[in-house]
Length: 339
DNA sequence: GAGTCGTGGTC
DNA sequence: TGACCAAGACT
Image (tube, rainbow, N blue to C red; front, side, top):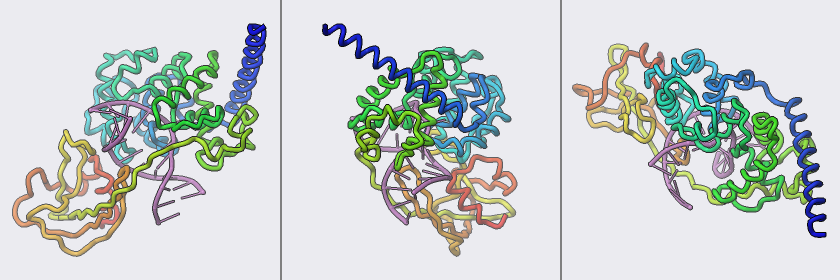
C-alpha cells in the first residue's frame, strides 16, 4: 500500500519534472540572448568565457572576450603568452587573478584540456561552478551548475528559506538542480536555468508572468517571490581618501609597477600616492572609485618631483602608457588629462 | 567559515 | 544615491 503510494507519487513527480524541463527548454530556445560563446563548441573558448563570466555581466564580458580571442586564439597561444600582455588585455575587467590562473592552467595542461568535471576542477581558477559549466556545455557531462542565478531560481522554485550564502544551503540547491537536470541536454539545461535567472527570475521584481515554469514555482504559488532568496549579512562600505600625483616631465609621467606579490592588482602600473619628495600642486579633479567594499575618494594633483624618482618609480612616455596594464584609478585619473 | 579580490549596471 | 550584485575562486 505504502509502496503503491510512493510509486504513484514518484510517477507524478517524474511527469512534473518532464513538463518543467520541456517548458524551460522551449523557452530558452526561443528567448536566449546571442553571445559569441554560445556560437562555439570549442572547449578552449567555452573555458575562457566561463572564467570571464565569473562575477561579471555578459554585456561587460563580450568586448573583452572577442579581443582576448583575437590575441590568444588557442590554448598554445595562451600558454606562450607573457603575463604582462595578458594583464593588458584583461585590464578593466577586474578580478585579475582569473587571468593569471587562466594562463597558469594553460601551461599546466600540456596542450590537452581536461574532458571531465574532475579534470577541470583540478585546474587553477576552476571551482565547482566553472568545472560543471565547461564539463556540461563543452562535453555533455550531466552535472548541474550552481551560480547566483541558479541559486535564486532554485530557492524560489523550491521555496528555500535558508541563507543562500551558506555552503550547506548552496549544496542543497545544487542537489535539487542536479535532480532536475535534463541528462540528455545538460549544457543547454544549465544555460537555460542561468538565462532564466538573468532575464526573468530577477533579484528584485521577478517577471513571473513571463516565466515558463511559474506553474512549478512554490514561491510564486505562495506569493513570496520577492522575499526570496534569503541573503543575510552585508558589509558596510569603508570610505577612504587617496591623493594621486600627476608628475610630468619631457612628455613622460612618473609611474610605478605594483609589486608582483601585491594582493591587490599585482603587476599593474599606477601613479604615485603620497610619496616623500613629491610636491603636490593644484588640484586637477576629484572622483570616486569603489573596490569591493572600499569607497575611495581620489584627488589628482599636478605635482613636481625634487631630484630622482623615488624607489620603484620611473618615467614612462605617454605614448607607452596606453599599452601597459594600468590600475583603473590611474586610468580614471588620466582620462581627463590633456594627452 | 569568513575575508578578499574589480568593475559597472541597475533600481 | 546608495545598496545590491553579477555564469566564483582562493586562502
